[in-house]
Image (cartoon, rainbow, N blue to C red; front, side, top):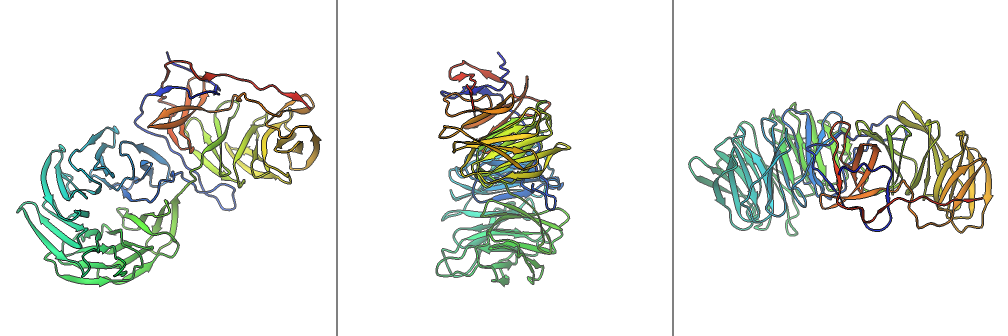
Length: 551
C-alpha cells in the first residue's frame, strides 16, 4: 500500500521504508550577489580529493567524481543535474564519449562502468582486478581503453567486448590517451612512457628520467600527433616535478621544471595552442613550452582538469575537495563548493511551496519544492536548532547554537534583510512567532525566554524555573515552554535507507516529497515523477505531540 506520510516522526528505531530508484535528479544551486547574505554554494559533498572531472563535448555539462558518486552539473548555471551511482569509493577517472551519449568511469576495486546519459542505465565492464586509474574513449568513440594497477591496459569495443589486453609490468600505467583509433600513449608507474600501435601490435618504450621510482602520472597527445606531453610524480631523492614534451619515437623535445607539486593532470586545449598543467596550481604553456600564466587564486594542489570546447575556460578539481572554473588569464570565474554538515532543522511554508533546511554549520538553505532548486544563506556560526515561519508567511525566524536568533524577510520566494537577535548568554534551542507576527520569542540553555520585536528590538525577558527550554509555542498573549520531553516533535525527519545509508524523507504535501542524504543533498524527488514509498510494517514509526506548560 502506498504510504502518504505527512509530518510523521520517529522515536524508537528507524522506519523501514523502501524507495523505487529514479533515473535523475533536479537542480540545486545558490546564486551569488554582491553584499548579499547568500553566496555561491553549489553543493558538492565532502568526499576527499576531486580525482576526476570531464567537460562534455557539447559544453553543456561537467561530470566530476569523488567518494560520494559521479555528479553531473550544468556548466552554465552549476546546477546539479544528475547523480550516477554504482562505483563504491573514490572515482578515479571519468570520460565522456565523443557523441555525448555515454560516460565511462572507474573505481578503486577494479570497477569500470559506462552509463547511457539519456537513460542512466549502466553497464559494468568486468576484467580488472585492482584499482582502475584511467578510462579513455578513442576519438571516434569506437573503443574504450582502461588501465589498472593489475598491470593491464584493456581495450573494449562499442559493444563492451574485450578486444585486446596489453600487459605492462611493475604496477601498470596511470594515464592513457588516444592519438587515433590505433595508437595509444600511456604513462606508467615504472618511470616509462609507452606508445602502442594496436593495429601492428607493437609498442615503444621511452626512458623518462633517472629515478626508477619516479612514476609518470599524466599524459596527453598534442592534436597534431607531432608530440605528446607528460607530467611526473617526483620522489624524496628527486623533488623536481617535470613536464616533458616527447616526439612519437621517444626523443625528449622539451623539459619544464616550474611545478613544486606532482603533476597529476595536464591537458591541451582543443585548438592545440595552450597546455594546462596542474601541480600546486594551474600553469599555462604555449606550444613551444613557454610559460604563459601561473594561476594565483588557488591554494590547493590540482588533481584533475579539463577544457571546454572553445578553449577559453578551464575546470580544475583540487585536493581541498573543491572544483574551480577559470579563464585563460587565471581569473577565478566560479567554483563548486559546499558544506557537508548534517540537517539539524527544517520547516515548510504553509502552502508547502517552500522548504527551509538548517545545518549544523549554521548554513540555511531555501528550496522551491516544485523544482527543488535552492539558495544557500549564512548568518549563524553554529548549528541551526529551530525554524519558525510567521503566520503571514512573510518572515522566517531561526534559533542557533551560536546563542543568536535571526529574522529574515521573504521577498519573491527568496529570504533577505536578516536581523540578528544577539545578546543571549547560552545556546538557543527554539523560536516561535506571536499570533500577529509582531514578536518573536527565543529560548534555550538558560531559564529565560527572550521576546523580540520583529524589527530587532528586545522587548522582554521572562524568567522561568527551568534549567533549559527545549520548545516554545505561543498561546494568547504570551509564549509557553516545555523543559524536557522524550516525545519528538512533528517536524522531526523520517530516515529511510537509501544507497546503503540513511536518507531523510521530507514530505511536501499529500503525495509529494523530497529525499535528502543526511548532509542535505537532494537525492530524489521532484514535481513530476515522485518516488513511491512502501512501508513493510509500522514498527518504530509513531506520531507524538508535545505537552506545553504555561509560563
